[in-house]
Length: 62
Image (tube, rainbow, N blue to C red; front, side, top):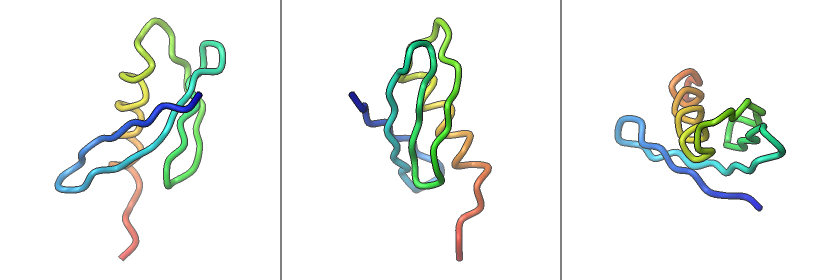
């Protein structure tokens, strides 16, 4: 089941969705889909931190 995640970067809110597949977190957002190791952290923490990293790295189209 997919869960929603939102992060604020500057004055913009970015949204994505995530789910667990075993110990891996699958995160989908406007820039694509990534799979990341979740480990012992809560999945919502991993998803929000990873989404924030991805948003900051991706340049916005003008």
